[in-house]
Amino acid sequence: MKTRVEDWGLIPYEQAWGRQAGYFEALLLAKQAGQGYVNRIIFCEHPHVYTLGRSGKEGNMLLSEEQLRRIGATYYHIDRGGDITYHGPGQQVCYPILNLEDFGLGLKEYVHLLEEAAICVCASYGIEAGRVDKATGVWLEGDTPRARKICAIGVRSSHFVTMHGLALNVNTDLRYFSYIHPCGFVDKGVTSLQKELGREVPMEEVRWLLEVALQELLS
Image (cartoon, rainbow, N blue to C red):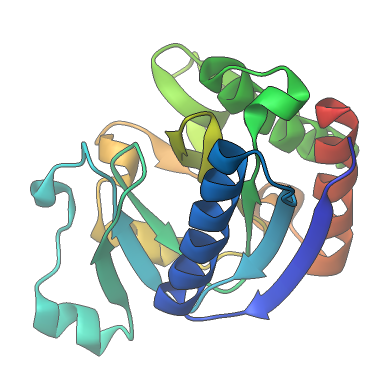
């Protein structure tokens, strides 16, 4: 089943959250009413922002409100799973808003699929990425002391309808991760395609690779 793809460009987090919540609720209501609906995959980037998931610990944010203002970042408590993460320019964010039943997927399989899509993108650049037990997302050298996360994943699901999704570090300013315990970890690092390759990577290229991987895995 094909999905509708939208590219929102650079968009403030609060605005994107509201738009995807609208799509999510509309799909959920249409599904429950037996009416037509559209599955969507949304791509975007955000200005500097930190988001804390439902199960997150407030202590994993290391900055005060004044310090947040000083670095030009905002902070939101949101309705996805997972702990705290950072979004910013140069990071490819993807929000699939899907009825998983259309694709024969359960929630665990869906999260695995999102991870696989990011692993495929990394492989396109010759980077070997994988998973870490009990640590959702995509990692490099995950089972070693050099473990570092390249893609964070956090989703919300209701009646097998999803929102939120993944954030793949492409040309991300990694200094912003030093102000938090990313995803609640204090002993693991973060990385980006740019850091691993030693060069800037075209965002449009990554977006296209990610779209291709997601469409293939969903079909």
